[in-house]
Image 1 (cartoon, helix red, strand yellow):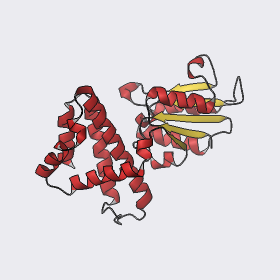
Image 2: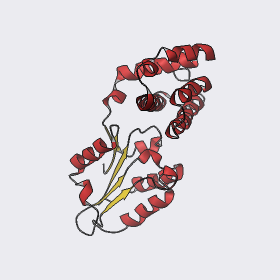
Image 3: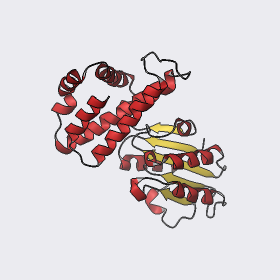
Image 4: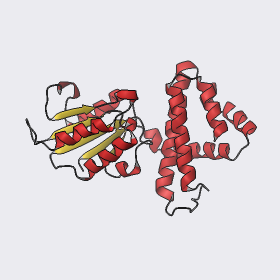
Amino acid sequence: MRSFLIVGGSSEERIKKFEEFSNIRFNHQENNPDFLHIFPEEKDSISINQIREVQKLILLKPFTGDSINIIISEADKLTTDAQSALLKILEETPSSVFFYLLCPNSANLLPTILSRVQIINLTTDLASTENNEEIFKIFSDLISSGPGKRLAYIENLGILKENKGADLRISIDNWFNNLQFVLRNSLLEKYTIPGKKTSSGLSFKNYFSYISLITKFKKYLSANCNTKLVFECFVLEL
């Protein structure tokens, strides 16, 4: 396996894990022709044009060493077209090329991308079965309740009571990330045949609708909309 996904933690923690795993000093690669760092640019996303630069680089032989190393920071911000182009590269990666994808959460990445990488998860809470079950129970309770009960339900959640301001924004964003992670994993693990219901009662279309809804409201959070209002509108739109 020559492609890796480092997910979870802070950006600094992901870079540190990259350095430990690759034995490469990230800040010492500025003039290295065998190192390419891709990160969000236009519209805070990673475009297909940036991935085309990757395609050009991997056609070359390493110039200074035995390998070419490509790091993609905030890989969850790859556009759909960029992910499709990257997938083709990952399927036919030259033996001298190593890919490192870094992101806080993998929910926005295509399942086919995830199947082509070795995942290094820094966020143990996301991998916790107990935590996953709790998140899915909250989600199930919300979608099975009427609008009024939903608002009353979230008022009793510690996430709204214990945090304020920036801390509340971070907590809500983390909750969205965790829920996306749980829904995506549930879909990959339990869903097999189109049209068939999973044990959760959700269809293939249901899963993708909810995952897309979370993505939409995460964008509202990043646009500095009122945090509590964003969460309440999300709950009502479920």
